[in-house]
Image: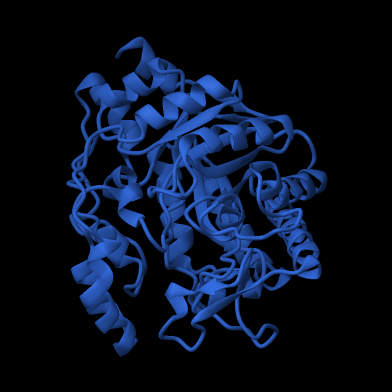
Length: 403
């Protein structure tokens, strides 16, 4: 075992929480909340991650309100699901792990239209690519009342999360959802105090952070998922991402999970590897959407060569910009890569596909040391599997070998 791997597997502090190691199961949308209610599959999924030995497992896309969902079968945080949330956190704690909830709002990027709103809203009036063939082709611009209400919804969701026994919260500020829409110069065209300069575009994310912090207290760990780059010219790029990180650090954020890409435009900038588009087309239920994906989806879902630690150069720039803990995400697939990320000064490592392929990864790393390498082949069929009954899975099948 190298010194870097040894340090990775030792207990680590994140604000007032001590994790058993520095490995984090990153938020990968599970598709396990039928009718918006956390199901038994979701509980088993995160319990298996804890049983395998990760320090922290992250429940993906916990919507802060009904109009913050991209589609109806996503979880939104309200008192009616409190018993299920308690079962979820108790299952993870029973396996010796810690659990985080990723609080999110979709903004304009939605196929979901609750009765309370005529159309989804984000920073600016725009075309809603996701809802183009679902009867909501346009997104509106949030007004002052919308913004105040949304900030309050984040705070209320954070209160529920804390009371349900979660150990941490990740605020989703990436991937083209609401807070990312405000941060990105390509998506935010406002001319008021919430648009224009980066400081203005960061106003809503900082208000959300302050409201959540005021709800959960100083010692409760708050992370944010933030794009290093949107992955296209005119979007958020690394210089402004580093400035955004400094603003978040000054506002008291505990750690940043560094990511990249917009779901609506550049998802493969995040995933890398083989395109999941053919399987996604087969699973799409809306015939118009299916046809559009078939003919035009290749622009957003090209095959993009995978290389280990593909966000490393961008992440290095953020590491030089802040002193706060940083969580490296992006192509961690071997012990050698893990050791290199630790050497680069990153405090925690976030893994998605490698843990879907093998929930026992932390135990296997403990035994195999520098010889460990993930069996994930980056086919990205797990991305398409989110729409299958039972939710996300590795099509190769989770490894079952005894460590």
